[in-house]
Image 1 (tube, rainbow, N blue to C red):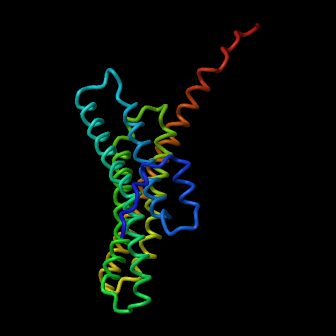
Image 2 (cartoon, rainbow, N blue to C red; image 1 turned 180 degrees about the vertical axis):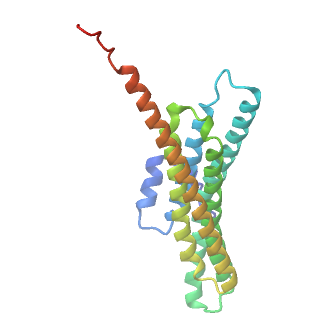
Image 3 (tube, helix red, strand yellow; image 1 turned 180 degrees about the horizontal axis):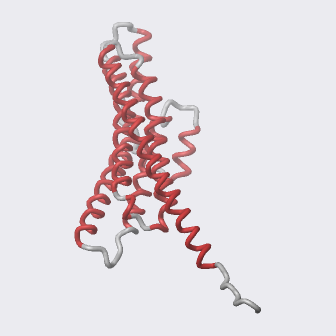
Length: 227
């Protein structure tokens, strides 16, 4: 089986053309990994703009470390775009051989590999959310909406990955392993939803506070009595 082309080398319009085509890959797994990479990249931009010239050395170190974690997460998720397509292509090919040879021994290995990709994508998305949540109080207020978008995307990635994993994992004959994977994925999903809610609440409070301040500043001066 030939190695699939690196999907990250495609232009956006080329990737979308391949995604909409009636072909096994790329599919939902690659789309989810791409969304995760977008969330990590956007989060990195938010962090990059949130270090002020007068920030103390400790704050700068913390923000730079967060930026490095997000850059690493983006790198891993980019790789998963093609990795998912490769894993599913292998599963698709083995499934076809299995119809001709029911005792095809590599089927379970292919199923496990296909299920492992969305699990890893969700785990990385969770790390993106945790990194952003840890620094939410330090975020530049002007980037709050971008912070919210990154968080919402990352949580959606984990939720979507859960569906992909359960679809593939149901073919696993090793029931205890299947149940462990699904339980772990659900725990990741719950953690991601909770973290996204915390970030959205923070963003909402920050934006409302900013709107109230702007309203006070724009209020016209009170005229003196008799004028």
